[in-house]
Length: 270
Image 1 (tube, rainbow, N blue to C red):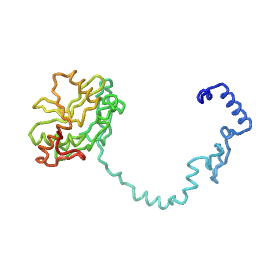
Image 2 (cartoon, rainbow, N blue to C red):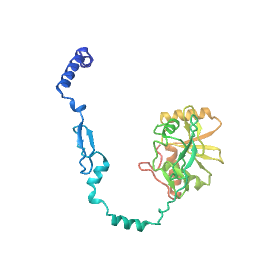
Image 3 (spheres, helix red, strand yellow):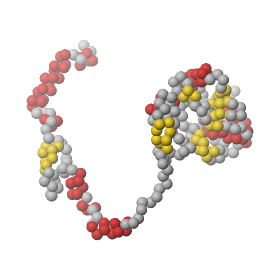
Image 4 (cartoon, rainbow, N blue to C red):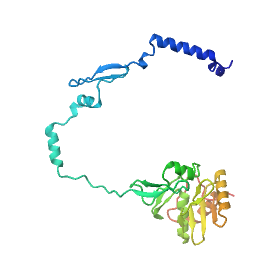
């Protein structure tokens, strides 16, 4: 008989039942059902409370415990009166606080209106009503901006309103500015079969979308194939690692504030 089949056998179950009954009869498990009746340790309180025997509780409530244990830190009535007089007529310091912002979840199956916190910058509005909707729509793969944000943030030398998700995106924007090409960062999301896809850039003068990727995983390949199959009329250009290194080799010395990625060669290998 194997170990697993022994623990599933009727013989083992009967043995455990007999042992448990014997322990209950002997009072071994009485601590699980018995309560200890105690008097509150506060001298002026006459309440009685019950708890399990192992609980070190001495007071019937937090109020009684605070009254007894915090006497050394309590302020005198004279001190309280002075503080009250000093604060009379004063208002709470003003804090810059804008009203909550509203939005509509962009997940096609949801579309629910929601409110997001006032401290979220207006330049980075929430697009989904919840993390659950975001994960279902964007996906939790490593290629998702929810999962991988290498050196993310605003670059003041490019645009104080645009939040880039990587050094490569920021450098591509610098390159477009250097070449005088008009660009937009993630202006539109496209609905695929089971998710939404947002290319990194759109070049309106060329009517072309740009996707910058270190490499194409199987997931990224399937997503790219879906996009091209559903939107054959839309031009999408992939800039992969080798392409990016060639651009860096040619233009990085000419562009101020170019960000070099650690471990990335300065020129492409053959």
